[in-house]
View 1 (cartoon, helix red, strand yellow):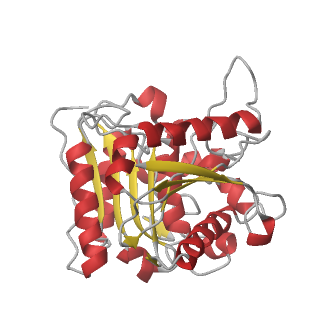
View 2 (spheres, one colour; view 1 turned 90 degrees about the vertical axis):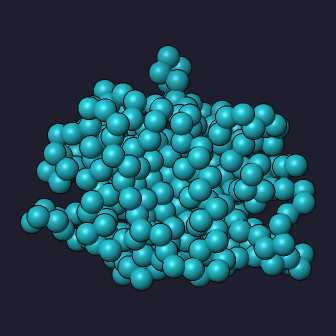
Length: 328
């Protein structure tokens, strides 16, 4: 059984936004904290969604996770019930600059992570502070807590998960990113003579995050990135939407991967990762569209295998990219 609790912003603990903790009433012997970003909505006919409305949206999502009982479909509620682990949902505010010059808070957009002066400053570190706070609370109760946390996400929160793993590999060692558009960063400064600044790669990582990129810890993390074979590119191919990226970032996506579909870009990323020896990363194109449908078995296997690896330090499984079953 799951319950939820709202934690308000606490600048003294280094986070400027509230978060929700969804937690099992009967936790496992060893607790692993998970994080999923909040996918709030801006209604086109109503203008900017208020932060109170965004908070309510996140609370309603948490309630849904707690009430979910039907295991017939592999939705996020079912996923969380099966994990039976605490889940942090940061309620990161969408702001007036949303979609302008890639200031997309809930995707850790480029100009968000460059911001060092507003309440959004060092946003990835704020999420880490939330994790540390919850870990400490569990430890005070005498419970055993894993030092590293996991990330899960769907769509926007899937992009958030992949970029958080990239930004903070010292804190996270598991990333499940579903229907996240094949935009995960590459652990490279450049490729084929093309520079890869964030969010494409590590070219200006130290400037942005204030530390060198920790390749050793990043390679240890178990990661799975999935896109659906039937996801419509005209709607979801965010690498080609200028409202989600500044023009330079958009141009670089096309320079690196070509003017291609989400599905082909995911395959190209898989090949690059394999060439880099990133054997803990699985990149797959699976049945279904922009949903969990058709992806449940692979997600279950990934979580089981990842947990076994992390708990037992077993040999990692080589990454793969499922081939497409039909032409795109």
